[in-house]
Amino acid sequence: VTQLVWLRNDLRLSDHPALHGAQQQGDISIVIALTPAQWLEHNESSAKCAFREQLINDLQDKASTLRITVHILKLNRFSDCANAITSLCKEKKYQQVWWQNELPQHEARRDDKVEQALDKAGISCQRLAPDLFVSKPVFNQQGTPFKVFTPFFKRWLQMLSAQDRTPYPDLEKQLEPSESTQTLTSKANFRSDLWPPKLDAAKEKLWRFCHHKEKQYEADRDFPSMPGTSLLSPYLALGVLGPRACLEAIEYTSEQGNRDWKSSVWLKELAWRDFYKQLMGHFPDLSKSKPFKTETENVVWNEDQEAFELWCNGETGFPIVDAAMRQLNQTGWMHNRLRMITASFLTKLLLIDWRKGEQYFMSKLIDGEFAANNGGWQWSASTGCDAAPYFRVFNPTRQSERFDPDGEFIKRFVPELAPLKAKEIHDPTADLRAKVNYKAPIIDYKIARSLAIKAFEDLK
Ligand code: FAD
Image (tube, rainbow, N blue to C red; front, side):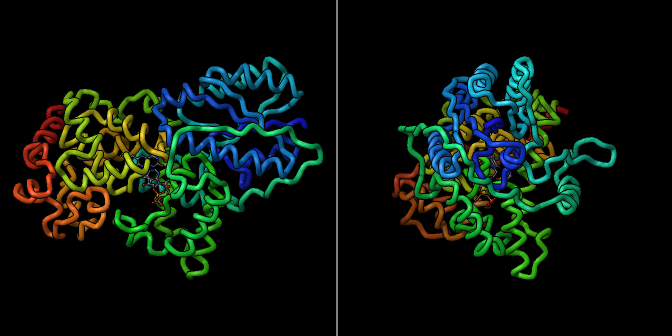
């Protein structure tokens, strides 16, 4: 065995450019580096870490049927990777190491260090493009990154149409027996009923979604009580599904329904994933907790820890916000519409620093993904690239009436409000709140909104 493939946030065996490319050159082994201290520093949730471990177990089982060895390196931090991977190569006599680049700064720095260490040891290195739908940088006519999504998407779609979209071929079974596997055991829990930690489960979910829901996605996706979105984010965050495999499913269902795959609204949502990831590569400051719009560094954020905790715990007295935060705390996932509502609530109505919300989300989400989370928070806080304008402050009650009209979602996560009628549930009267023991709103929407707008206008 001469080729070693390092898997990171691309935990899969199929539709994988590095695995495929490496196997063209010789027999392969896989290495996965566990860096729990680093993940903790990145605020990754215990649910995501446990999900990852169980996926790695499944990946090892599948790899062993192909006689592919998976080395698990139990390290602490990214800075341990260079030595550990180089030593492994020397010990096992691997001649070449393959991986797909990652764009955030810590990851990019780690990869440079590994490359340097391998180079010193005379081991070559194949660094492939990042694991994106359009892996080349999507630039405008001036050759610079797009700062607005819509023109990015237009160009992205052109590039995607022009590139090879066939999934990478499956791996071949190797001749030499593989080394034994190391089962990882984690005590942390996650909702394995919602997200089975199996590589095949991700594929099944993808195809089921594309067959039955993708067509309806545009109509259903904003209603949190409906299963209108794919719920694939935990798998996509860890790269369990390859971009081309996703495209294959979209193209197939579009063709079956006589639709043009390029007009898939779901595909457009996936483009946001590429948009935010590419931004990480172009603007290193984003990896340093800096806002994209530098002038917003001067916003005077509210230091109210008590209000922050009430928001975290889903005790703001705004039913839709509380239901959403409880969904996050109980399941490790939150519907996109609710991520926008709760993030707007924290950053605008409570005027609390978006970085606190970003960190809290990351520490709870099973799909926590740095670029998407940072992008979503900076969008909501109006500090980001192509962000919501600063005067756009979601009205939680209006959002609730519009996107959870019967209060079905609220009742699921705030059961004390279940006795209320649809008309009453979005903003119950003081009497009703007292009756069902639900707290009063922690802020007055109108006053909080004008303070938020003022805080941004003061920057001018
Ligand atoms: P679907 O609607 O089925 O979308 C399919 C996939 O497209 C998603 O799984 C995701 O990979 C991608 N996607 C969709 N919307 C976005 C988006 N706006 N930005 C980037 N990628 C997108 N998404 C994450 O994957 N991880 C995060 O940590 C994360 N944090 C967020 C924080 C905030 C404040 C906001 C507003 C959004 C965040 N998102 C994040 C984006 C989005 O909310 C989730 O991707 C989506 O809710 C996941 O559910 P789904 O898989 O059913 O999505």
